[in-house]
Image 1 (cartoon, helix red, strand yellow):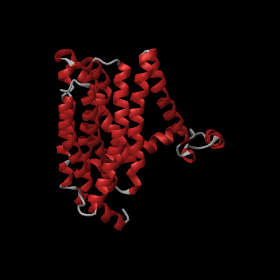
Image 2 (cartoon, rainbow, N blue to C red; image 1 turned 60 degrees about the vertical axis):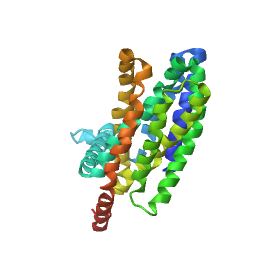
Image 3 (cartoon, rainbow, N blue to C red; image 1 turned 180 degrees about the vertical axis):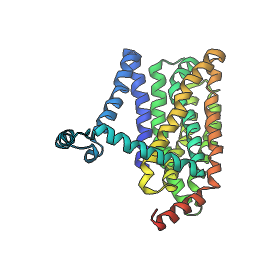
Image 4 (cartoon, rainbow, N blue to C red; image 1 turned 90 degrees about the horizontal axis):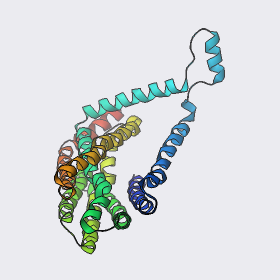
Length: 300
């Protein structure tokens, strides 16, 4: 879990750094092709490699089915049915588990703030600090890489240490990171000195990155192992669709009306609200964990 979280942090800031550098020299279209297109290609490749044994019947089976007068199974049909059934079961589990409801909504709010800051950060710095887009991306990328990795590791270590004393530690670690990093980020939006901006951004991003491991681990704590991967996938899909996918156009709309210098304040405020909301999960997580253990003991 820690490796996955660190990988997400590294990938995000490296993409920001690389994209900003390419955009400065070759324009945003080339930057998009170089940074965004490989992700689509890898996703397509992964979809072809995962579970090859479940891709469906072979050519011989389809020929035999045709001769018997009934349509043969297709790989797409079988995989789609299986994926859909798994997703429905995962959604039912989410709605029946109060901890997951809190975690999903709070995760979307945190993703709204965090990824919104990453997406709009270079433009904000360019306009307020007078730096080029490439220099702004490097400032955020290098500092964010160091702060993001160290914050992700620190959040996991703190949650694991605290977990020995408090079973609610993972949720509390997420909330603490948001409540420490959020005010720093609000302060950051008022800073106009590049050196001071870099320092404050580093500390703010360090605390905000605490959520990566503990929040995902909480999902696994309260679901059965047989559907944990599906629920985790639904979690990541939801927080991005309901989080940063909304943050980018919303901040742009607010920027057109009130100016970017004011619009960006919505990002840390929503992230802090997510940190407060996730505390609701602290009241239910022990009960939901006990239910999973009871179901496992019954073999359900």
